[in-house]
Length: 449
Image (cartoon, rainbow, N blue to C red; front, side, top):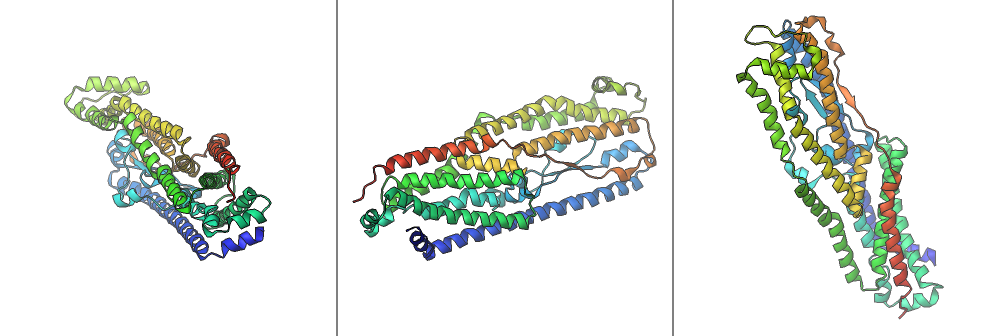
């Protein structure tokens, strides 16, 4: 019986065409991810080369005044993507992974990003995560919506019921055949991605794969529950497609809009204004208050005295520091609001498998908003480290040629994802168990006629 079910299913041209189509789309998504990595690697190589040339060129032009030289010099910090990022690009398509910062005020530099085509941002990247979350469920629906209704509409259900030891067992066999083909397609794509992208076979890749397979099991359970209602094929198809629209588009968009309204970020503008005012207004103010605040922030620099000249680099960089200090409160408030948005989205995602899978894919791939915020925090620490190295040299009027400028190569930020298996798989397992139980209850009332 089982072999006949397999032959009957795979003999369908529609099944073969749709399976081939999902495989092609999966391969294309992996190649797009590979191109994304190549683009990032090229940008990192160019930044590395440019920083060396940039420093050498400016040092050759400005070889006498350290303060003036450091006004122009930029130092790169790179959030280098891992190979797994190619499978779920996430926030990486809008948030730059490269920060080129000067030792001047920081807040005006941290949130700089690249310019992108708004049309491509609206549609998003066709990465492998997109294929799993949005396209594979459509394949599941196409394979399962007529699992029972097909037999009834063809008039073969009574014959099947008589010949089968258990009609429920027969339906489960049909479902398992479809699930097996879907899982084989997903496994083939994972194998191709592992080879093409040179993915390390580790716990992170395993978590990504397990999450992907469980997500499809959720859709199989959901579809089987709808099939167990014993309605006609048109009703099943329309119902399942409506559920797909709600879960994949409507609910995530609603949550995003709700979170944005619950946690507005007016601090984004006020931070910029405060930072600029904190610096620019100091030109028209007495130097004493500025220096007092600067020395309160950095008591180790009180040994440097302000010269009587109209302009000094000590005073200038003190003004720059005031721009950051006076916008610190708004900056921290903005960060807190952004993290509140992320936490609220993660909480809501526990009840929405599509959103849950998307956020976890991004976490595992190092392309989440949380990863980017940690990168910005590291940028602040990197900026402070560069200040602490150069401030004494500027204030002491050190020789430009006395610094080994070749030591300043781009630095890298990396974060190993923390995998919470319970938090990752439990929501999906709950949904799978729930729909399976509901389907089993309905199948007990199944009608043979």
